Every structure is written in structure tokens, then in C-alpha cells.
Length: 544
Image (cartoon, rainbow, N blue to C red; front, side, top):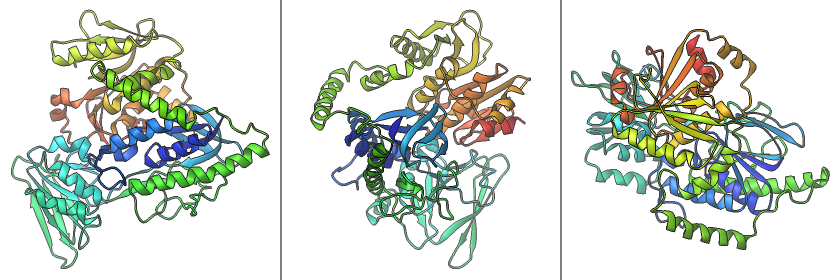
């Protein structure tokens, strides 16, 4: 039972957590991918008041620590559905169901697709949506960036470290971001800008070979053709679509799907608020997200206080730290982290403090069987497993004996306590965004996790022929973990299915074999290739 559940751990959700927990309410933050949200892929923030310069990851990490120090709890789980018509509301997640008096919806938004001819066909084969995730695949190539806002400009500058030439295609007469940002483009000789132009069509055989553009002022069209034997890239940064499809219809939205809220960030449903990019607003920046989170939390505090009185609940559900205690905690953590900076291996001291909460959810022992080769990656994986298993008695590891049936080495497979393979493999050290996928895989095998929807469970059980799913990822990709988790969930339910995560930086032959230019990429039975993040339902649909 919580006073507030916040869905989404971007700047809006994190700020709401700080304010709610600081007011001594019991707060739970749900996040399905990574704490910090979309802003974590931003390498440079220079317009947040009081912070001269930092990365998105650094800023949101400080927010998370601050929220935790005030007593907020965090859970890596996806919100699936909600019951909001009663005083005590229920949130159904991939980690079970939770009760709460109030809800703050801050799930953010996903990159928008434009719908030009060939966009869907060439996604992953030249068309991409995340420079941080996919930029390295376009080294030495010509790249077109579609969009004229902050994201398009910043990602163009990021891509300059890889691409041979970048052409920024802007539909409007000028950029739609601050001039201080767009003026930085002048420092990059390899970036050119074409205004009042939009992309119309892309084409080719397996990979991009040409693109057609139109001048919106004159109507004149022109084409770009890749040189013989080459391909090129198109990165789309044309805004975002609110992540509201899963939200029940009783909450009012506009035609684009954005939440309709009042000045206090309240929706039309009592004790349910919206915050951040998911709301209707003219400016989507960290500073406005933070403002939304603060407003939503302080407004919800009044609702929660009234419900405590109405339902005869204790005045406060938690005994959160005082501000003096928080300051002392922060000071001690800084001293401890500074002392341990040189000692940390694969896991930071803060992560080590959080892992016991995960280990408690393991109901039985689970193992990791490591199959080695003579590569440097094998040594890294040994070091990772030694350090990880030293943190708990519930996870053990062993070296594979004899000849592995898996042709791709090194690799580690999750095994049961009795030594049976679960069909879940990691080819690479599951760091970065994939560490959460690794932890969830252990829970799928040895922990208590809620069931999938009955129709999804039924489809999984109907698989009677062997199925192999390779998920090709980059550890910097924010969209990859969802596809990895979806495949692992299916494999954990049916022994006929194997799900293997591959860190593409160590398996370039797979990139060449399947012509991968974007991640995540799911390869089913070595012949069916799917690009983009996929849910269990979408993977099962591809299997049918």
C-alpha cells in the first residue's frame, strides 16, 4: 500500500518522487527501462538553471539519489493496467499488483515515425531513430537527419563523430530550437542544412540505395543516390508520440493522445495526475518536466491527506528521513563513493546497496553456466560473474565442461539449481541498459513474477517446435532491453524456446550476416528479422 505511485522515472517522475517523499508520504516509482528516461541519452545539458553543464544521465542520477534519500522506493517494472475508480487504486505491473491512494502518470513519449514511403521497410536497414544507439553503424557513410528541433540538431552533432557527411533536412523555414543550440552547427564542417524540405520516399533492395526529397516552397523534387556498393543512413527526429496507449480510456486525452490536465496537473479522474512530456504543453524540456512533477506531487498531497482522513488511515504511512538526516546521508555517501571509486569493479557501491532488494525476490538458487573461448571477452565475463556471485548466495556460477552446443562463444546460460538449461543466454557482459534485463531474467527463472495475460500464456504453451530468438543489441541502446526481456520471458515459460542476447560490439559477423544498421534486432530461427522494440505479444505474432 502506497500513498503515491509514480509511473515513469524521467525528470518529471523523479521530481514528483522527491516532493512526495520529502512530505513524508510513502512513494513508489515504477520504471520499465532505465531511471532517467529519454534524457539519459543527451550528452550535454547547458540550459538547466543552476547547472552550467552536465549530461542527462548525471542530472537524473542526482535526482534519483535525492528521491531515495528522502525515502522514495523504485521498482523496475512496466505498468500494464490500472483500476482507478475507487479510493484505493490498483496498478498492475510486470512485477505484481500494487495499491495506492494516488497516481502520477509520467511515462514520457516515444520517437515519432513520419510515415514516408519506405520508412517501415528500411527500419534497421538504414532508417534509425536513436543516434546514441545506432550512430556507430554509420561510420564513414553519408547521413540525412530529418527534423529541425533540439533533438535533431544535437543528434546531428553527435553523429558527426561517425558519418562522412551529414545533411540536416528541416521542414520549416528555420530551426524550432533555441538559436544558441542551432548556432553550434557552424562548428561542424561536415554538417549542411537544407530548409523548407521534407523527405518523400526511400528505396533500394535490402539496404537503402536512394532517397527522394521535396522543396515545400517550390514543389521541386530531388534525389540522393548512394554510390555503387554503398548505403547511407536516415535518422528521424521529428518529435515524439505520448506513451499513453496502455492508459485506460477513462482518462481524457487529446487527439494526439496527450493527457489533458488542469493547471495543477490533475486529470479528470480524482487523485490521478499527469506530468512531463505525456501532457499537453508548448515546451517539452527538462525544466518544464521538473515543474510538472513538483506541481503534480504537491497537488496530490492534498488528495492523499483527505483520503487518509476519510479512510481512517494513519496520518503518515512512512517514517521518512528528516532533511537533516538526508543531508547527513548525502555527505556520507559522497565520502564513501570517493573512497571506493578505485575499488569498484563491475558494480558501483550504490548498486551493491540496491542489489539485496532484488536477491530477496529469488525464491530458490539459480545458476550461470559460462562457456569460454580464448577471447578477451571471456576474461571480462569471468570477472563479472565472480564479482556478481560474491554478492549473494542465491546465485552461483560454473564453467561449462566439454563442447558447447552453442556455436557462439563466449556465452553464459542461465541454469536451474539442478543444472538444467533455461534457454536464456547472454553473449557479452550484461552491463549498461542490459543489466536490468539480466536481473529480470534471474527473477523469471527463480523468482515470483506475475503471470502474463491468459491469451499470451496460451500462445507460449502452444509452441511445440524449437524456436531460437537472437536479440542483437548495443549496451547504450535504450530500446533494446524491452525486446530482450520479451524474448527471455517467453523462453522462461517454454523449454522449446531459446533467447540469446548478443552484444554486437563483440559479434560483428552477426551484424554483417543480417545487415543490421539499427538495434534492437530480433532474429527468429535465423531467417526472420525484426527491428525495433518488441513486446511478448509482438514476438509471438511473428512466430504465428
